[in-house]
Image 1 (cartoon, rainbow, N blue to C red):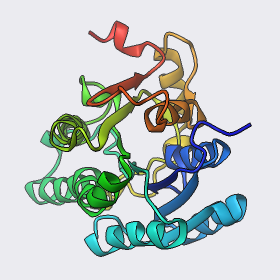
Image 2: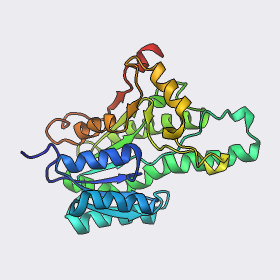
Image 3: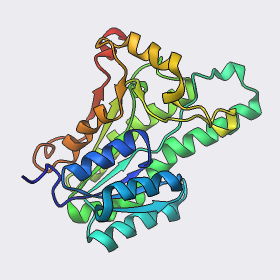
Length: 263
C-alpha cells in the first residue's frame, strides 16, 4: 500500500538527530524521498545508511545560503523535484536569563540563536521558493510551544520561536495559493537539542539531562515526556497533498495538552 507521501521529495534541515531524524525516517516510511541537511557528518552517514537510495545528504550549516542552495539543487538533481521543505534546525538557551549575561555574551548569544533558529529558516525558504512553487508543495517550520507562551525556554529562545511563528504566518500569506506554509509546535520532547557556543552550553543535550526530562514528564497532562517520533505525524499531515491540502498558515501544537494549563 502506498504511503501518505508516496512520490514526494522532502528536504529537511537539522535532519541528523532529534525531531529532524524522526521526520526523515517517517517520511521515508510514508513513501517520500529525503534530502537530509545537517552539520553532523557522522550522524548524516548513519541516516543515509538506514534510508539507502531514498536518501541524499548535504553536510553543512544552513546558516550559509550556499549550503541551502546546494540542498535544493541536490533534490532536483537526484529526485527531479522538491515537494516539501522542513525548516527544523535549531538550538536552545537552557533558560538562560538575559540579566545574568554580560552585554558581550548577550550580543553573541543573540547572534548565534537568531542565525540558527531564524535566519536558517529564511535562507532555506528563499532557496526553495521557486522549486516549491513549481511543484505546488509545502513549507513546514519547526516552531515550539515557546512560539505562543513563556516558560519553554529563556528570553532568547522564546523570542526566536515567536519570530518563527511570524515567518509561518507571513509566508503563508505571501506564497498562497501556490505553496502552503505551516508549522509544528512541539512541547517538551526528548531529543539531542543542544545549547549555544556563545554561552558554553553547546555540549549540553536535552536527552542527557535526566532532571529536565523528569520535569517535562511531570508537567505534562499525559504524564510523559514526548519522544521525537511522537511529533513526526504532524509533519506527515501537513505535507500530505490529500489530508493537508486545505491547511495553510496553521501551527499544530503537539504538547500533550500542556498549553491548556499554561494559559
